[in-house]
Image (cartoon, rainbow, N blue to C red; front, side, top):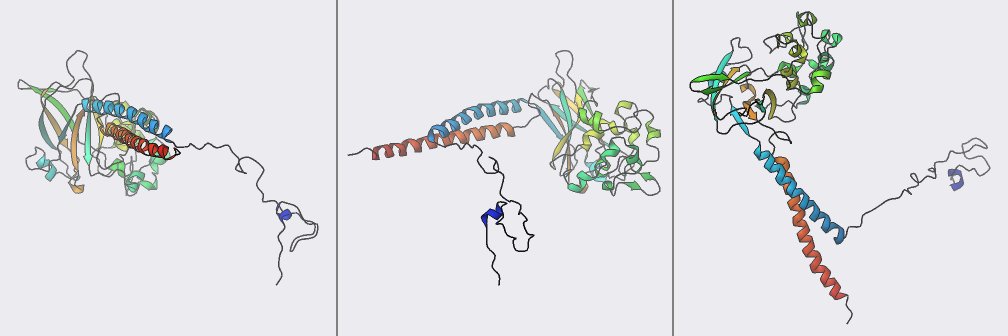
Length: 372
């Protein structure tokens, strides 16, 4: 058995003069020693804080004194936002939409209508945002999120004729052609029609609902485009088929407004931005503030007329309409304020406890150090 020796100089790239075992005579071994740099030799300057009572206690007190007022401000601001919610799922037999919920399905050819009456106790000032909300609808499912073709939605003619395989099983229809837009997200487009009216003195006054300006600017002008521009969409989408659950093809979503038709329809764009949670809301319409000093929505009686096109019984879902104002921090969301108050309160409480402990035991240690 032959033993092999270790030579530090050889490891550093130096040879001992004679040939090494199994190597060529006079050859050199490549050095594995790291370069003599501050980074590779771990000589970089470092700073490590020394946690003492003089630094930790003021930090906790400052965090508590800053976070608690901020949390109170956020919480009060959120509570000042007015919000009204109407559930029109129709699960209860006393609901005005009970008949539609029980009898309507995706295969129904005749639309079902119902009306929900409600009363606003307080007027809504400023712009009012009208949302539709769904519950128990998992738009965050991996297969569902991937079931789309962004190239097709961007107006690519090649993808329009040959959609991505990610759209299966909503990619093509046999003997008809490719589906536009393809995929499960587009196929499940929310298509209820909601109309709001104000009731006063026996008369019914429709409330103006603005349908443009509800989508993100980048989605409207960058991500979504019609093939061949916004001209003759019927010719642009020739040879394609509408999604299975749609009643009309994509080029008839808003035929009266070419800037809101086809792939750039804002209701469609809003739906295509998938939600992260199974209970979500999406912007449906905007009720703009009036020019005079009258409230946007005065207190009183209203009626919500619904064309019930979107069945939710199959997945035990619920549908609702939300009327809401907004503030500088967005919509109603008390969580952020509660989180700030909680963190600030915990930090302030810990600061007090640590101060008491430090004061008690530091005094003992000082007394023990005094010589007799």
